[in-house]
Amino acid sequence: MKILNRYIFKQVFIGFLLVCFSLLTMLWLTQSLRFVEMVTRQGLPVYLFAEMTSLLMPRVFNVLSPIAVFVSVLFVYNRLITDRELVAMQSAGISPWQDAKGAMCLGMLLAVFNIYVMNWGIPQAEAHFRDLEWQVKNHLTHLMFREGEFTDLKNGVTVFIDKHEDDGSISGIFVSDESKPNIKVTLTAEKGRMIKTDAGPRILFINGVRQEINTETFKFNTLAFSRYSAEFNNTASYQKKDATVREKNVFELLDSASDTSLDKQEMRKNIVEGHRRIIEPWYNLVFALLACVGLLVGLFNRRGQFRIITIEVLCMIAISGGDLALTNLAGRSLYMLPLLYANCLVPLGICIYLLCFYNPFYFNRHYGKRTAHYEN
Image 1 (tube, rainbow, N blue to C red):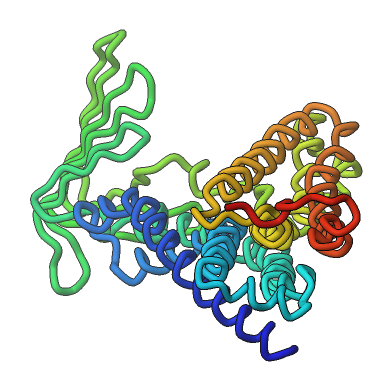
Image 2 (tube, rainbow, N blue to C red):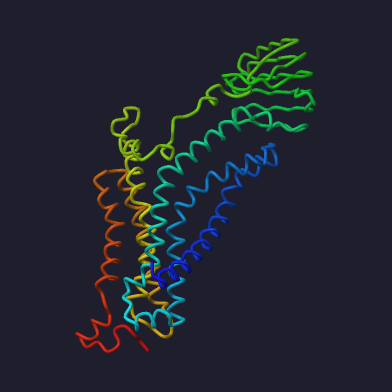
């Protein structure tokens, strides 16, 4: 790599890190808000909070990476024009393609890295996140019960614990169970202990009373016991769900047609996701070239490049919007998949063509344009 290319690559790379880190930080804060309550009110350990929120970052990075590289390339090349550095380079005979190599190298590097992130990083992170989420909801449920507070579970169960003992037991237990229709169950006990079983966590009650009432027949039953064991979540909640789309690798997604457990809509969704994992990483290269192509081959204006920058931003928005729209259409009909590829490859081909073959000085000399490249 020439000194000029290394200089531009360094500037663009530093800008990319700053923009990407800023966006990741803001989105990390927004994503972590839904876990804050689990820490402050339900007693989720801080290390689990940090681990679960960090596992969301590969997915966020994949979305932000093309935008961050577009912004950084646009900023750096516009600054080079403002400082007249690019003007000096072009006057020395350096072509737009050579000037764009720094941005192209960054786009290629991020494209290759995002291929790894989308096809290996995100599936592993999603699988690990679901495992942690399952453990928090099941095996770590005892951490969510705080002393002297009523804890409402999602399945109509309310648990109150008076105190956590030093030996791991709990005292002063009250459980109200309304998970079954027309039946209300109340359990009180002096002491108890959390027990982990294959079916999920259970509470072992010691020296208590179980009361049950049918709201339709008003039949009332009561039972005094010295030991009683009961689960406080639905058994179905302890069964892990099948792997989601994000957890599957690209080969499983593309071969979804042979999976008989999927309906037609889910099959199309999986196939489209598989193709997107091939296409999406290359938007880093597309947006990197798009950001610099207008500034390198467009009209130069001493008053600033506001018009060119606006056009490039609108083109970037149009390409991103086209990708989202075509993804939805391809989910309904797989015949739209070629358009999904065209939305990425056509802008890439146009950018490469303009950088390689469009020479504004050659155009001026042969067609007599007095100020085709430079405007007052």
